[in-house]
Image (cartoon, rainbow, N blue to C red):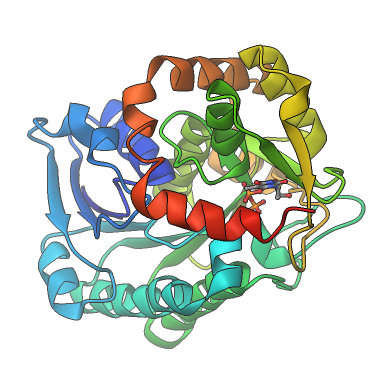
Length: 335
Ligand code: TYD
């Protein structure tokens, strides 16, 4: 079994590589990653010398590189994506290029190579916002942001390759993911690192929005289970079952880092902000024999500790391009 993992130097992709190498003694992993801003070689440094692992730097939208990376591949897991909603509000071009066009190029190459399985890593955000209850896999797609619309485009493109050409496509839709090695632009790593540095925690709107949180390792294990045991043509929701308001997360971060409540800053709400995400994961639990293992209390505490102990991982990030985005993003939101 030879798995092409795209975006394997990113957050969830690198957790996947670790979980796959642990669970599958005979697996070969090819990591194809463009190494754009949110990728980090440190995320896979500990597996670099594993003879089962190899790395290719390149774009999933580049047909030549992808054809090379696809040689001998039996399974594809496509984690490569632009994934930050706020960046997609500033401009969606990169999102469409990677999440839609890149998916197309990858499917085309996977079809040519005759792979056994193609797994598209997607998101619960393609369903849109839900006031009550939880999304099942049959819910119509109703994405709200340029990011989630791009991901929905990728899902549909992949399934079109199954319908038209017989490519065995499986889609997973994950909920908000947290854990070590996450680039500090998403809520949890941003707030944890800001709290550790005594910087403001910019809460959008009233902080009452709800997300369902899953640990990166649990998400990765769900994707692996779907890749190995899922039925082509099917979607599997991979959620943690941990619904929390953003304010709850903010309070926890302050408590666990010992930072002052004065850091809380209410800023203008995100444009088109989805109020609530919630996933029904019973299908994945029933059909894949998967369930999330890491409790949110434990996972969050461990994550805070990881950022406390790994300043060398994130401090260099919080300069240069990051700063530029940060100033642009948050200066405009200040009330
Ligand atoms: P985020 O981590 O960007 O994930 P997503 O938008 O894909 O769910 O945001 C999670 C929630 O946290 C979302 O409701 C927006 C909110 N949020 C803030 O209040 N302040 C911030 O600075 C960020 C990045 C997010």
